[in-house]
Image (cartoon, rainbow, N blue to C red):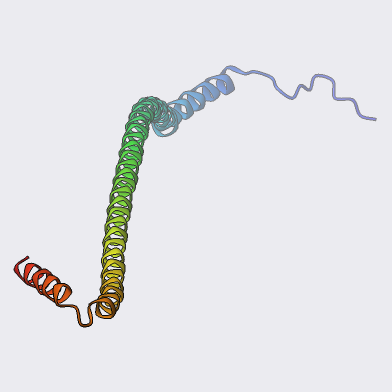
Length: 170
């Protein structure tokens, strides 16, 4: 085997070190101009975008909190309005029912009074009719009795004539 005694893969020589340094500096400058600045600018832009997004999220949260408060207020007002409307509807219903009851009672009272009056008038008419019939019957009976008793007696005939004259004047 062959031994390489003095061989080292990297043996710094001043020329190699100088050229390595020059190439590294050029590489660093080129990278700084074309890579590092755009990367740094992109990072700054991303940072500002994230910051703006966080601020907008905070504003959106505040806006949502305001909207929720407004919604709660609107719901409370709607509930209150609903309660007022229901109360008014119940009051209107009660008023209508009470008016209907009062009108029904008044109508029933009027009908009962009218029926009583009609019954009383019918009763009076029936009584008058019965009295007339009784009077007619009594007169017929009295006439027959008087004819039988007065047939031929002059005193009785003059008495009946006087009665007839009195009846005509009344």
